[in-house]
Length: 65
Image (tube, rainbow, N blue to C red; front, top):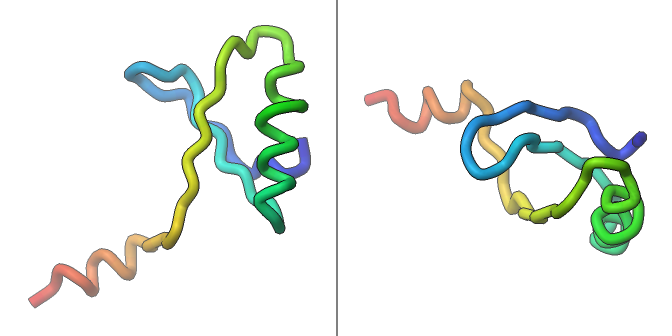
């Protein structure tokens, strides 16, 4: 799917984490409730929104003294 930019296989309660980049919340809602759940093997989804992102460079600068 074009909106999915990255997918990670992870440990813990979830099997996969997908990074989705969409222009509007409605696009995310459509992807999660219509497209992803229609895929074979997808039993459940959980959607989380990122409000702000930090790069490794930002974190190093934030914690350097």
